[in-house]
Length: 520
Length: 117
Image (cartoon, rainbow over all chains, first blue to last red; front, side, top):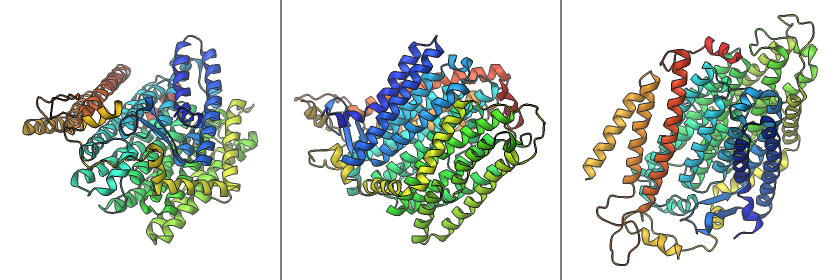
């Protein structure tokens, strides 16, 4: 089992964990932490791309910890969806790492920025890779605890207040998630996702399982920030330093979306129990409230925070329609969105640096002093709104096309309307920050450091690449969807020698002798 | 036994929900702790209740209790303990900074200014 391909599954988690430990050991020297951190981010990027390459060429890869055969040990599985998420978060972490070199002040570094940053990456990658539903809970908690630390590296009152709201809401989500896991275990007697995928289709949707599915939906809804559970997001994201906010904006909510996709394709069917209708309505309301919330804001970071919410709605829309075309569209959407959203936050940081303020009413005149910044802003902004030929156009096109094929007209109409309103919001930022005459006339324009521009250019280039050469990416999303819709490959990777399927509901006393047999 | 356990979980959950709905930080933390306890007991109960049964294989014994939920509960307890400790420190810090225990104490304009530090 210990060949290179299966070990590759572990690197995206091991590298950040080792780095977190190493940077914590170098606590007194922020400069050394910075170097170790950058080296590790490069390694992480390389490992993530290697994993994606292997998964794309060889199919689903699984690793059993300690060689305990599934379902008794903990399993890490990289299917095309996880691999894509890992790769894109590797790119994002690298870009944010460069940005942080100049954005995170030494005072914040001494508050533990580096160990927390890499700890968060470990949590995120762990959540993407794990093939065990209880293990997912553990990674969620790793993410939550490091997120809280990152929210308060800048120890102001606003930060602590934001962190408390974040913590309370997310802990509540965790509790719901645990209840759902408990119900699932009570009904099936296993926690391994591949095992669950084998057992659940043969079981009736008992009240316990229905409750479990709905609780999963609520728990991931809180993590993803969907209507009506999103209040923690705009209350906390804008308080963190830009580099950290960009990382959160790109990754955290998407982990919730990823988990929802995993659970509602692998474990539960979207059909029946009114689940589809609930998700469709939630998706529509999420899009609308997010975009209207953004419309009344004047702070760049708050505008962008609300747009995270509205964009989550599009991804849920794919889940609600649940045809392979729709899920492929949503997968493409997630990948595109992670890059674009984080890039917009980085640009908000650059605007803040150039204009000296976050408040659009006080900013202005940047087109004259920083013309290239205006161009760089247009790439992700127009992509977010969904204008061709940028990546957002294809993402929106795929999702809306899928909803039209299923004749869910109202959902498609909402999606198009929200797209138009997103364009309004983005042009508001552009008009106010770049186009308008400066409110305060400044003799010398403020410089934007190279460490700000480089990651913005990098992520902008990724957006352009996805937009102009969309074909391989769409093809990849289709491959990922094929594994999601028909989990046979996923199950075969976890259970290579296809043992006999255990009878459903073996959680009664006596299960223990099964596991004993596996040890020997 | 079942009735006792079920009502125990019910009382813990009810108390937790009531406290979480308060508009002050400290009751919310205590409420979340209550909810966590309720979930832990619930998780434990999902392995089915068996009295006087060993969790480890022994040729002489016929009935077992499921060891997995116990391991899960142990993990959950440790994690939630760490989490609670962290939040208590955060809340304490927030209280010392603002002298106020309200959850929505500083919405809107003030948080804009607090970022300059």
